Figure (tube, rainbow, N blue to C red):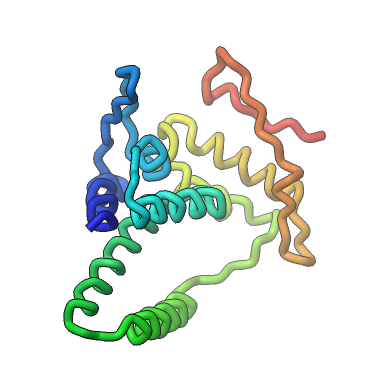
Length: 189
């Protein structure tokens, strides 16, 4: 029930047409957002399953920086199906095995339909377009391209193409009060 409630709260905020939620903190300050991580961070949850879903969202945010809403909605749907199967007398181990098999099938299918392309510094436009896809859901569209170019240039400057590794510890983001997003720039050094 708690998982369903948390997933239900976030479901309407998922995707490019997701609706914003207006959050009110104890001081009466308002925050409007459709970011799952922000919504869950501001929620006061007490139920253990709801807390696990908040932690799942945090983990997703730390690992990838995106997909926080989707992972909670998906896990809520999986837990709802597990509850349905448990009510019909199916053993929890069989349910877990079924989820594991389904996960393997989905991963194989995604591998078969995904397009792979070499990440090389002379093909920046494809990387910029990829970065823009993610940034479009995070920031105002007026400076998406500029920030995508900065992000791609930053990653390419610390990428090791031989080992296919990026040391993100070498990228530091510094904010200065009073400016706008359009003032953003990449400083190498």
